[in-house]
Structure formats: structure tokens, C-alpha cells
Length: 423
Image (cartoon, rainbow, N blue to C red; front, side, top):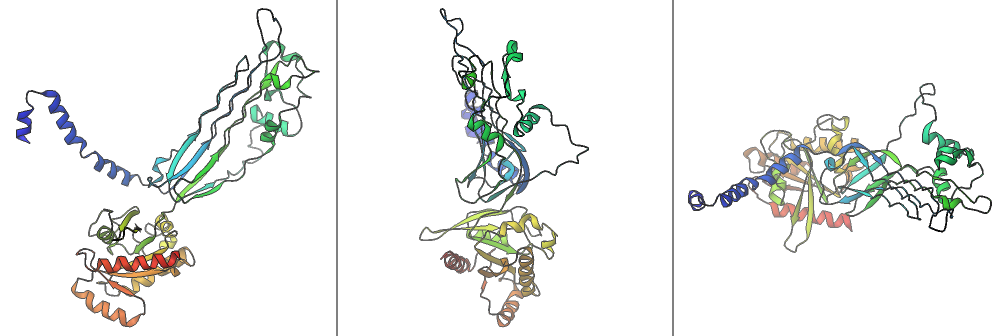
């Protein structure tokens, strides 16, 4: 390093680039630590579709045409909000609390229609469940009066014509009678059709869900030209976009899920068998968010394994990390129970884990599973393992994740279970 600095002493620019390179080398590590602290798997957000642009009131004018036909353009449609499942995202921290699409622009004269608003595409992790949260209506005495634009929509649905639906030409507002005006079919349908309740499960990469539709653009005054109405001095306002309050819940998708007590060696096992590098320390609750690792076999077949934070007795009642991470086990095809065989009664830990899974979701503990007897290299583990084998018919695979012993047998056992579960 000193020789490099002497070489670049007369080149300040090169020295600055060298130091910048050394500093930026550690930027990915800082980003990974920040992403780990900001892991979010449950949140609420508000999505708002873009409002449609208003139609234009305009009439053709030329050198020899003083009073031509109507030529107002239509307003552009508002942008919509889409959720797209992306396998490269691992947390809901990429989703903002308020998501608003771009509104459409207003129409202009000479039949120039407004441009549509751009759609807002939000990438969410694969395995995100989207539910709409219905707000509880306020009591009648506290409710606000139905005024403004939405009040006009309500009166429109009741059959009355509201001037708030229309854009009036300022000088001719008193001469326009909109009571008998027939609305365009798509505009009337958008007024009368309430948005359907939303519930989507984005389980596959690239899967899309429309969560907020953009508002329809207003019609220009040429739409109201007829034999009886030769001079329509009004057009339609654009409609507001759909507004929803959504609840997002992330459920990790993996072939196999590691289930175990705190400090049983789940993270060490994942580091030994896959390309993941979760934090490892000799104390409980080292893992605070799920990690997913990929196991690549000799024939290039790949298997994904999710490391779930430790489960303690009472987790179904939200004790410990509780429900925050029990949801990540629900989508795993195979359960891999990591049990510390050096504890006094390791079989009791296995019974407690299965009981917590069954209480959280009936039938979850009966999925295909394998028991990994970890820390088998310790002195007290041998006697416990032999006694456990005599007590149960469950297949036990003794391993030492720390020393990486008997890892191949464990990974091949997990692969057989996953292939049989998928068949």
C-alpha cells in the first residue's frame, strides 16, 4: 500500500480514485447491515390511483370561421398502482406508506386529448399477501356532510344531475342545462360500479396485481353535441382514482424451513449447507429475520432453505418473536427440525416445537419433516442420541454443523423429502 501511495504522489487525481475505491469496497457490507435492521414482513400502506384529467370546453376558430363546432379534447386517464412480485426483494421495507400514481392531464382545444398518467409499479417480495382493510364508518352525528366532488357523485347515483360533474364555460354557466344530458357509457359505468374488495397472493416471480385503478378522464364538449344542443359549453371532470388501505404480509417461500429452539444451530447449519451467511453467535435469538439459502447439488439441482428465528414455548400466543415469524413456516413444503442433541432431553424440544406449530396452524406439524440432531460432536450428545433412537421411530440424522460433519447425508435426506412432497 505504501509503495502504491509513493507511486501516485505526483498524481492527486489517481490517489483520490484509489482511496475512493478502498472506501467503496465496504459499501455492500454497510448496505447489507442496514437491510437487516430494516427487515419488515408486515405493514399497512395507502394506495391512490391517479385522478383523470378533465375534458376541455373549446370551439373551432379560424380566419373565416368565427363560430365553429366544438373541438374540446378528452382528459387523460389517471395512472394505476400495480404490485409485482420480485424474487430479488426480501423485505417490505421497499414499499412506502403512501403510494400515489400520476394523474392524467386535462384535454385542450383543437381536439387535443390529455395524456394518461404513468402507472406506478411497486416491486414486492415473492410471497407477499395483499389484503384490503375496510375502514370502520364513523357515527352519523360525526359524519361530514356529503359536499364537494364526492357529494356530487353520490347525488349522480341517485339520479340527480350535479353541476360538480361538469366543467362549465365561465360566461355560459347559467345557460347550460345539464339535467337531461346523457353521460358516456364508460363514465356512467365507472360512477355506478363500486371497486371490488382486493385480496391477492403474489407467490410467483413476475406475478402482478392491480391494487388501485386510475380515474377515468372526462369527456370533452364534442361528446354532447347533438341536433338539440348545438353549443355545449360544458365538459366532464375527470374521476378520482381508487383509494385503498392495504395490509401487506410477507410469508417466505422456500422448499424447506428450519425450525428449532433458540441457539439450536439453525444458522450454523444453513451456513454449512448453503451459500447464505447469517449471523452466528453463542446466545439465543441471534437471528432476528428470516434468511434464505440455496443448496446446489452435484447435478446442479437447487434447493432453497429458509432459516426461521428461534421458536420458544408459547409462540402461538405471540411469546418471544411469536407470530412475527411463525408465518414464514406456512409455505415450506418440508420442515427441518434442528434439535440440540446435547441438551438433557432433546426429544422434549421436538415435541414442544411440533405443539407450537400445530397450535399456530392446524395440520402444519404433520407436513413431511426430518429431524437433524445437531451438536452431535459433544460428549453428552452420544448418550442422548442413542437413548432417543430407542424411544422413537423418527429418522434422526446426527450432524455437527460447526465442524461440517455428516452434512451430505442431511442435505440428501432433505432433497428426497422435497421431491416426494412435490410429486
